[in-house]
Length: 250
Image (cartoon, rainbow, N blue to C red; front, top):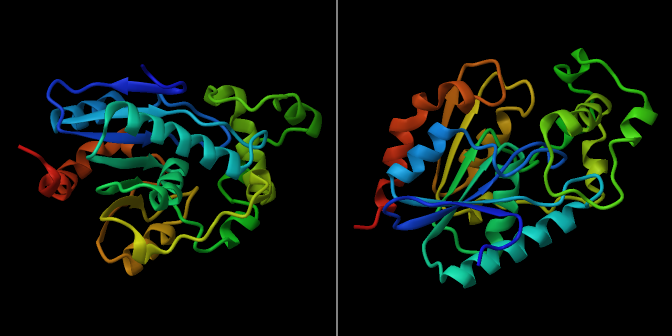
């Protein structure tokens, strides 16, 4: 049985499982957004991937999102009797991995351009990058909101909701719940990758983790984009492979 809101990407010879959480500012996106070269990488290294959708804000609160993911992960673990698994998130998906680790026992976390909201100021003020985008009137934005929280979306159908939240510094308000603080000292081994010129999520979010977590490493990029893995995943393959090597089961 495959739990609802999940896709299983099976490796030919798997020794462990990777739970994948997509990005999209918790407001848009879907579980099938993982680039093929990244899927292939994990399969080559013996990881099944379980990609999970979750209810999207602002229709869903952060509490709703976390509860949905907790229930789905637990069902996957129990159904497949998983004992060796890790978390992988991109952007908001990495934020979710950090939030969820306290309820489970992942061997490690892979966080691409993620955040813990150690410093909330960058979310409370208009973002310069998104201020370059056109603004939408309130009625156009209201038409994007659904009565029942959607569990997936295309970028085109809801991206404007996120852009507006960053233009107005109201992203945290869209979650309707104050995000619980993350104690980096309690994180499992963590691998971080982030551009120092990220226009969306400041590099200091990843720097905060590596400065305080007992077992974390941070690799940086100088690309001036947020989703650096869409164009430069090959740049991180060597250090990522070294990081996961101790967890490989023979």
